[in-house]
Amino acid sequence: MFIFRYIVSILLVATLASCGGGSGNSDVSASSNNESADGYWEGRITDSYGASSEVVFFSSGGEFIAVDDDSDVIVSGSLSIRGDELTSTNTKLYEYDGIYLMDLEIDGFVNTKSRILADVIDVESGETSSLSLDYDIFLDEPITYSDLSGSWDFLDDNDEFYSVDVDNRGAFNVDVDGCIISGKFSIPNNTISIISAEFTVSGESTCIIGNYSGLGAIVENELVAVGINSEYAIVQFAFKSNR
Image (cartoon, rainbow, N blue to C red; front, side, top):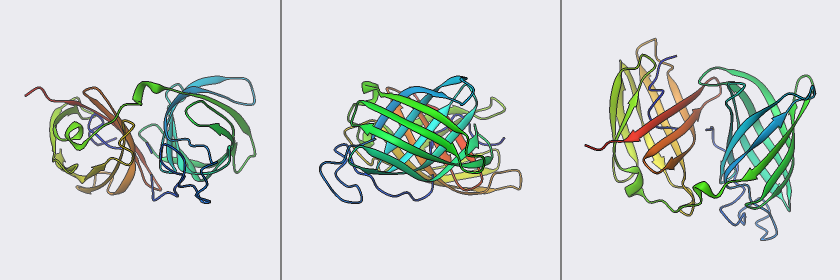
């Protein structure tokens, strides 16, 4: 597929319902008793046949993206949390850096900065997998727009080198082999190193034209993100330039 597979953007994602910041206090009921799924989580998903694979899970403000590297798939959607009960809506499965595959549902429990246990259900077949995630404090670091701004280097799918400049408000624009990617990164919760993004792809017919949104993270000098719309998911990486 096209696109600067090694630039920034954005796992997972359409306009999503809010479940709250780091304290989980902006859920539908705005109750301080609601747990929160905000942050970076790692664990495993196990299907009904007992096969399991590793999963990383980003969440912020009711938006989430889960990446299953072993199966080369991505799940995105929005979350609703009441007390410790977690459910998802608008939940979709995509190929890794690829097309939309099917609709899913997630139903389970969350303890803030501790554990997520849930069922992941194929809406069409009813087949259920078990998801178990532990909170990872690795990204529990504050970030500012100075961490986002500057020049970022990446490679496209043809291993050609590109660079993109992000300004001090998170905006960026880059031409990747005739595909124009223009958008903005934002910081939804500056106490954790997770970012959100919205961007548009335009240009030649070979480009995957459309509007995308999603989540990402900054880890030291590396930016990783996933951008999604109703048809495609784009996974991207970039590294802060030393120039």
